[in-house]
Image (tube, rainbow, N blue to C red; front, side, top):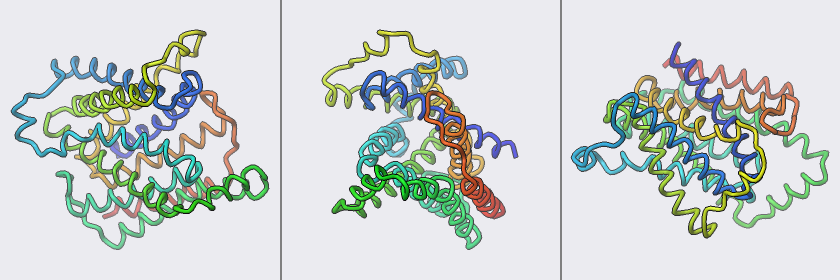
Length: 317
């Protein structure tokens, strides 16, 4: 029961981080710069926590040489996941940019569990787990997509945007790419979980992932933005919470590194997902962190209930 509660709490942090980084993006006028600031703060936070917990930051060259190469690509995948969502948003719209990666995460997490990839605990893919996964996907659609689709029928602007999206020549290619991005996200969760086992510290595993991702982002931002133009963030007084998005991200990676060896990749991904959606709905309901208020609809509550039933079926196996 404790891992389930922890997974829900981990999921709480991600939409809060997203809301904070969205506000930070407006301030610095660049999604890449906002991500860089968030990753940097998260890395510093995890570095301090790692030193306090393990009295060291990095691992030995011998450990790096004797472990499989994929053990160190979690941070790389994190940056790919982040950048891909920025690319997908104008091509698929907000709803599909959420739905497609989630489908990929659930599918890949079940495959990882079934075959024990990335040294994850093996949980065979039974018919009951398949039904549970399908219910979770259906619940996600109800909680995230249906309300927006219904509202778009009465909004001329949304109709125009939808038509533009549907008119895209390679629409299904982008959808499949979104599913692939989600599969990468589930792989990152499994990889970071095993890193925590190898280095005997989930905190150090989270730091390693964040550190690698941050280094890559510094290179990416230098190429894309031709420098690190963060001065606008300091020209006027900003709310204190604008700088804690990276801490939320660090706790998210840390929690996943801890959970995967205990409950497996599939259940970890799904439980965190439910916590994420619940918090996303609350952020919309109350307009937290500068988000636009959007009251929760009945269909979204139904979606959450369907997801919980799906989790119950997955957990029973």
